[in-house]
Image (cartoon, rainbow, N blue to C red):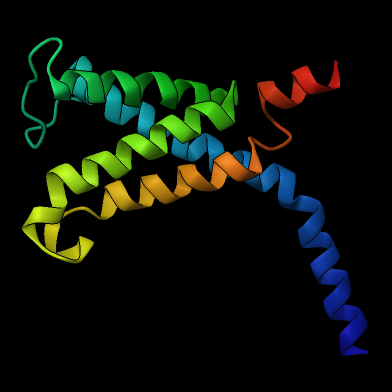
Length: 139
């Protein structure tokens, strides 16, 4: 009896996967977009984010975060945008954090690692059912 109950629960969870994947994409896309706006437009204006000069490495990071974040948020070119975002965060981790300690918790690199792996997941899964990619695929 427990086996059929378990398989029924798993089937319900499996059925929700495309929508939950879309929600995952939307949340991470929004967070990445806001990270980019904090760098590029100083909104929100955070004391922890110093201003960056135009065309500097920090400016390019902000531009990539903003543009790929918007694409991921709406699910437009999700796999490509997620690949670029994941690579950007891997680069950020190894150039800005790794030298300060071996583990991400030691070098304040946890956010870069989380973004990197979350976006790498989206490279392989796509944007889910609630995305521009999915709408274009249907038409």
